[in-house]
Length: 254
Image (cartoon, rainbow, N blue to C red; front, side):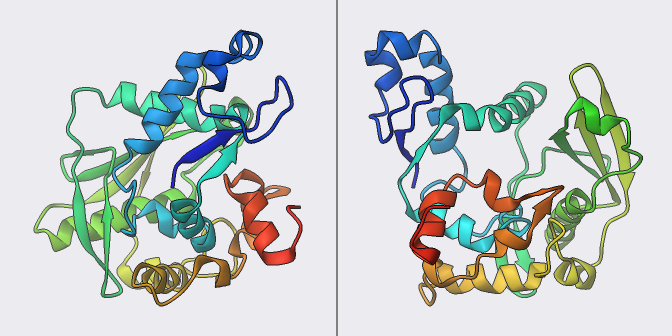
């Protein structure tokens, strides 16, 4: 389900209507209504919107968060979406005029779908936005990103297409760095634990398949995002449904 309301950091009120930044002159001067429109268009225009299809990027994160965000209509703080929006805007700009390759295949015998950013001469390319601070210590692509393009490679081969290797492009404020990667085998993909977590891609895949078939509820899934980490923060700290998800699990939204 899409964003259903706004938690406004300007007037500090929650569960406000989606047209809040157009009807409130004071808040609309602090957060531009055009930005709000683009956020909502980007969300509802996503190729998995309104479905239970399992996408490649779904497998990297928390299955509970993926399933819950498709079912819940949630309230969001528009400022929390800016980092994601910057990456989305860059992706749309740099791939403008190119038709993305829609892939459908299987992983571990379970059907999945995905859209790589670009494929050139059998090399699967993906854009990632990163901060300038991280650039100083970056010497290779992140394993999560290598896993993602590896799944695209597996799907391309299943469709009779070429998949030689991958290349991850990291975009910074004033630079872009490409890192070549070799493609994992299917067995390596299924055994991989993304986001510094303890659960494997195979476990994520089987959880999402059970939810897709209606055999499992998202609220009964484990809180995998809590053990997935980005430095000192967990995946839950960046999740759009963290509040209602935690409340379902513990009775309190924190």
